[in-house]
Image (cartoon, rainbow, N blue to C red; front, side, top):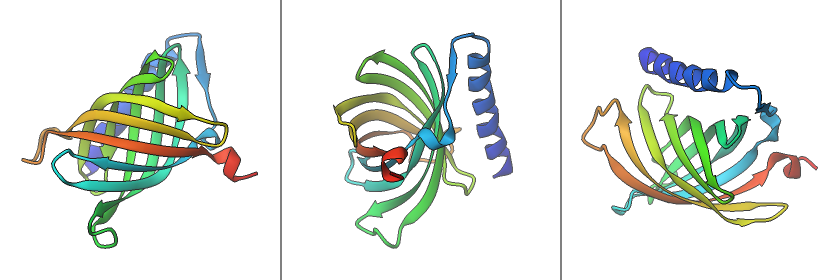
Length: 165
């Protein structure tokens, strides 16, 4: 497990190093993120519900680097199949409402997955945002027969600043 966490950390450092080389870097406080809930499927009948906190840490032009931590529950065993999750996400804004992303996830038990896809803002209001995503997930480094698989999801998020008012 420790080696996989070191690998996740190394990927994060390399992504961050790409940002450091430019002058137009914008950084954000950890408290500037969103509380979210996401329903997702692997398009083969398995559903998951994830609730947590995500934040964009730095941006450079159309590039962004963010992180999230959350709690995942599986349908239909909502209270028996669950786990914590954490991720580092590198995104590139293609249009105002469309982003290409790659995300490295961990379940804090040593397993890593890599998800790459597209995320679109479907509805944005002052107090919440609704996003949809479609991507491809594989175990990292391709360690089990569960990999790869498609994923699709819908996310509703609320800025933390709104919840703390």
